[in-house]
Length: 44
Image 1 (cartoon, rainbow, N blue to C red):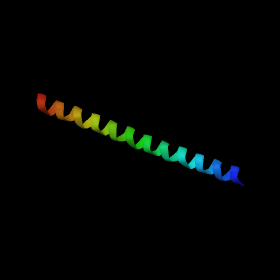
Image 2 (image 1 turned 90 degrees about the horizontal axis):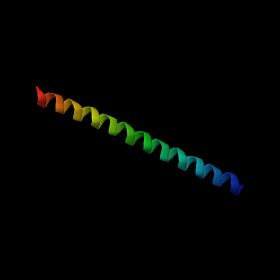
Image 3 (image 1 turned 180 degrees about the vertical axis):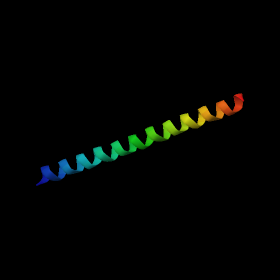
């Protein structure tokens, strides 16, 4: 029983870390896009 509980905790922890990483990557991509737009608008 304890093994199942431990496995469940590990899986849920891994999923949580994965979701956080995906969010960080998406925010980074959006920031890069916004920075490019700002640079282009300054060039014009």
